[in-house]
Length: 96
Image (cartoon, rainbow, N blue to C red; front, side):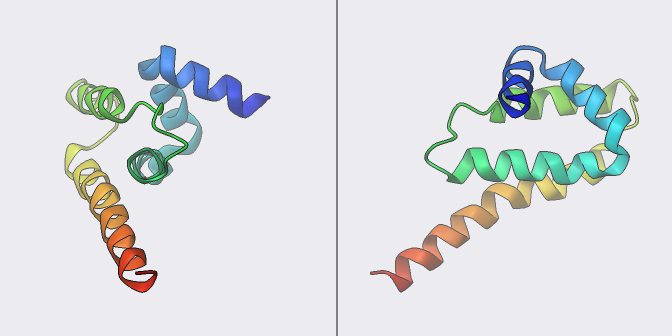
């Protein structure tokens, strides 16, 4: 039930949830963002996750000097979607 409430909060109050996650987990926020974008990009059952709005909010928080660093944020977010597409390609070649 707590996970469902987290998803609802993430969908409705993205900025507040990201700030709270950054305060709670510190630099692990980059891994959390990686996982959210990775799952939203590739898994069929999670297309409702806030991929684009999450990226815009994370960029906004970087610009507001909330502690997030844009140069640390770009590589994991960029790799999250690319890694999933490579994984899908690999699975497609194996199970052809």
